[in-house]
Length: 289
Image (cartoon, rainbow, N blue to C red; front, side, top):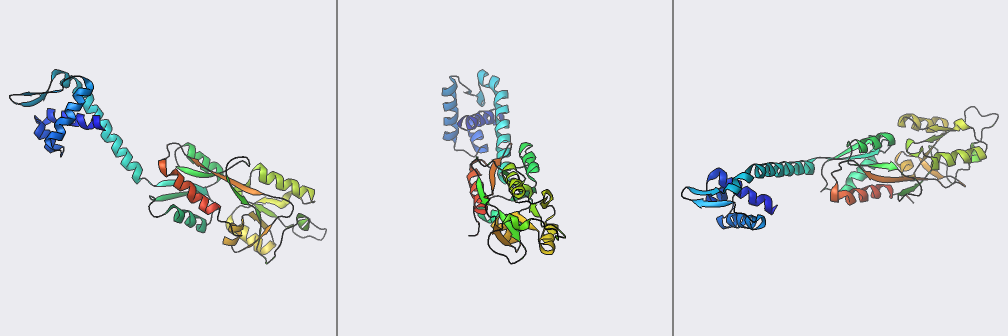
């Protein structure tokens, strides 16, 4: 910035004809303007300005450097404008489209009043990843592998009925008199091998049919199926509480949803990344006991 400010004085002298006029235009004291040029001349090892009968003008060397100096000042102004725009630009954060409004509100609250405007981008995991890669999101929550450093949320089954205690998968085994098989509805966030694969293996071991594990699909339809047909939703305890359901752990199978925060291409979070990470953590770690 010292070099840019010194070249501002040299260019202003060329435009206005004197150090004093340049200082006035730049809102500087004249001694400050003179010192900036002197330090630049010492750094470059050449004289840039000379005083004559008609005021102060660039030397021959100074004139030869003016075109490049003007481009430098234009680039510095453009960079400053882009930085100001980046400070004003809303943060676009990718969150699961299955997050409730309460989850979103928790995140915004955790980010605090000093955060810029926040644009929450609800999308499926693959769409959130695409948004990160094409610059459409500053950061997004993505499913993580079990061995990654990630947030871990225990998964169990939400039921619309007042039942408590663990769910034993053998209880869901279809009987000859069964009219409609009880299904376990799977959220798109849990369509990963360490959740779906382990659950399918456990269901097969307990004699459940393959079609008893189904995609959750539309939120309203899923809630209706829980109430009308006794289906169960694989989810976290907080999610079950938010939709007014009872959460029951699965007996004999330890399932977790693992999530990580990833930054997007050209993310503007910068040094505020830790704030965003802590805000997501405040939501994901706030599980009911």
